[in-house]
Amino acid sequence: MPSFPGSPRLIKGGLVLLDPVTGALQRVISLQYNPDTLTRTLAPQGVGGDGGPTRSEPLRLKSPPIETIKLDAEIDATEQLESPDQNPIAVQSGIQPQLAALETVVYPTVDQLQLNNTLASAGTLEIAPMLAPLILFVWGSSRVVPVRITEFSILEEAFDTLLNPIRAKVTLSLRVLNVYDVGFGGKIGSLYLSYQQQKENLAAKAAPVSLGSLGLQNLP
Image (cartoon, rainbow, N blue to C red; front, side, top):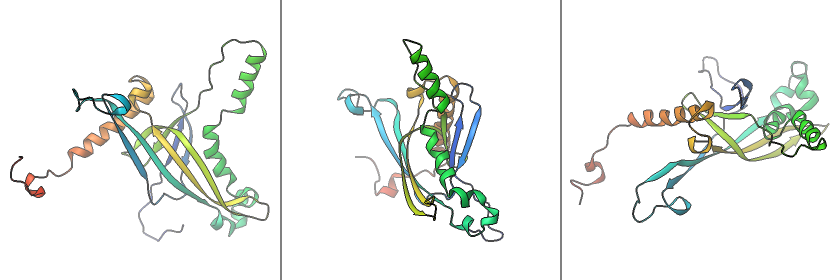
């Protein structure tokens, strides 16, 4: 997607992968093109069954809402293929490297699989589930939030002569991890609290509105 001379620098959304134990940076995955839309769903967690309130405490909240984020990201190698000498990877593999960078986020590594197989073969009675990276969804400086990928689909739309995909749409559904999922201590809890604090800071900047704007002089 070409840019015009003098146009402002475009900040891209993406994912940041951190080591779940040390918090060390493992990989940064930026979206080639920012999606046109971003769907966010908030499910309030009131006191009572299924997140609903009880008759005696209808205004109490037991936790932050369950927030989900859904987006469609486009990946396209068409422009790179127009200059094959400058983009040998695109010529050789199309967009498979970019797709693989996203896909492997939800795979345990081969080393983890082999280690667990070795432990099982040795008769180890209890094998801990394999740790995935800590994923941060980044959408500007005010939205840096820990998430878990709950749905991942890829629609491959065009292919080269070697059947490498050269254009695809990736749909991601992300579940925000809040402090009631991960606890208040540690890196993940701190990141979530910072994310919610940003919301509260932004809410404080919203212009106040009077009852008159709603057509009311006083409350009934």
